[in-house]
Image 1 (cartoon, rainbow, N blue to C red):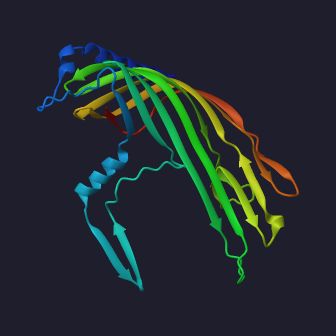
Image 2: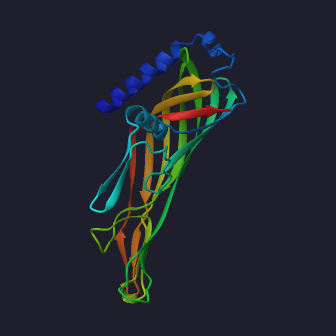
Image 3: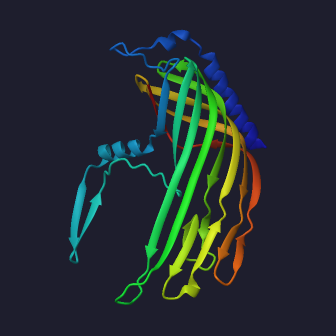
Length: 279
């Protein structure tokens, strides 16, 4: 209860701060070349996680060394500053934001979460004529949220916003195989063994369906005309329901996880900086 009261106090303070700073002249900020910094009615945006870019430039400034070593007949490479990488896997899904401005200070937003993974791990058969012995995994993480944002200037090229969103999601099962405490899997699994078909099995299901609604508050800093970095904090509810997971062989079918459901009301923060590009 104390945590909820503290969270509510912080949100109230930030909302009051953003609403109090309503000097409309700050909406007229332009660059030296005359480009307007803030998005306007009719503009739309594409937004992605900025963390890979920040990590890349941080490595560039901190250490640009690329080394290679020769030891025991092998070369080893240490590449310090790789290019930015964006993982949209089931284990680490990515999020893309789309916004459309119905007014200079108001926008609808759509948040799409997506990640897909598929793998096939082959085992050796010990024979000159290879046999099919492999384990496959397929997993999909997907989510969709829709909401609205309302903007207020704070200072210079910094502005705040508040709003709300509601969404649905489906996240894949993650855990150890029913017949192995050493094999961690994600999503649906199938094991095929042409040499010993009696060992073949499937393990499927267990995905979690989620429904959520939240109020949110955030801030954006425009470091270039119509390009900004931002982050947000929210408070809302989440209902989730996990489906049952089954382990199937030719001999029998076992329910390895009966699933369940939960309801939470709590604060959240993405932990990511988002780069917004407006058109």
